[in-house]
Amino acid sequence: MSMIGFIGLGNMGGPMAQNLIKAGHMLKVFDLVPSAIAVLVKDGAQQAASAEQAVAGVDVVISMLPASQHVESLYLGEAGLLKHIPPNALIIDCSTIAASASRKVAQAAESIGLHMIDAPVSGGTGGAIAGTLTFIVGGQAQALERARPYLEKMGKNIFHAGDAGAGQVAKIANNMLLGITMAGTAEALALGVANGLDPSVLSDIISRSSGRNWVTELYNPWPGVMDNVPAAKGYAGGFGVDLMLKDLGLAAEAAMRSHSVIALGELARNMYALHSTQGNGKLDFSSIVNMIKPADK
Ligand code: NAD
Image 1 (spheres, protein in one colour):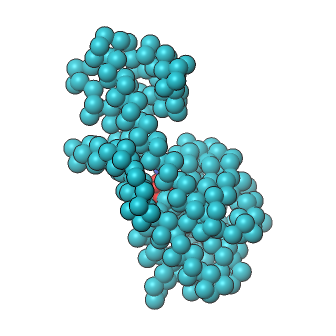
Image 2 (cartoon, protein in one colour; image 1 turned 60 degrees about the vertical axis):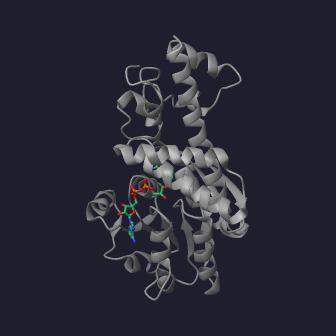
């Protein structure tokens, strides 16, 4: 079994690391938050006092950090981690970050002979716990094949999107569509309810008609329509408004670089930004329905 250095043990990284331990791997773990390390140590991981210690002598390095600046500052620079990673180790960054940041770190790694893939995930915290995440990988095919046995312990679907950074591009394209679909579905339901329809009946109709989508089938934003979704729990848990806003910002950044038209993506980004500034940043992104529906419905 391999020795893995795992950095970033938050909502996603914590359960992903647990699944690797369950599969029999030895883990050295590090996070800036000591309590996050303690949970993993209870499960059998070795505690590292720093990121450098976490990667010493390992076969694989996995990182799961919030945003581009965290990944760049961890790996690059004078004190950058790349210099401390063993020559034959593989780096798997699962964070959702800008494709440009991913490419920059991957190029720096390649320049000193290290192989790195970007492997952002889809599937949320439920998927991280259940080990059913989808990995969307950018990087060399050979590096993906080396990573596959580890990714298979944390997820069910693995896609090779292309070269370095391609995983990030595919991930943000998907999440931009999700943000738009959620806001659009909320709008359609609010329109129906304001005109006398029952939101459950309308959701059923849409789910079996041409407007059907992942939101109406599995993640309905209207309270009372579905059990076991954030809308049934006051929008607690799930995928936060601020994380959706981050991904829509990454889509906007990529669109500017490529001169792409993302009219609906930009509109959605502005809607989630307004929703966030009104104190809803930590709520699940399906709470966008509250910005759209009448307060008394
Ligand atoms: P999180 O904030 O819960 O966890 C991030 C962890 O990284 C924190 O524990 C933080 O202390 C740690 N960290 C930050 N900088 C560090 C450093 N330099 N060294 C060590 N640890 C450091 O975030 P999360 O929800 O686990 O999300 C992680 C990534 O996964 C994000 O890029 C997010 O967009 C993506 N993602 C999240 C979800 C979700 O549903 N939460 C779904 C898909 C993808």
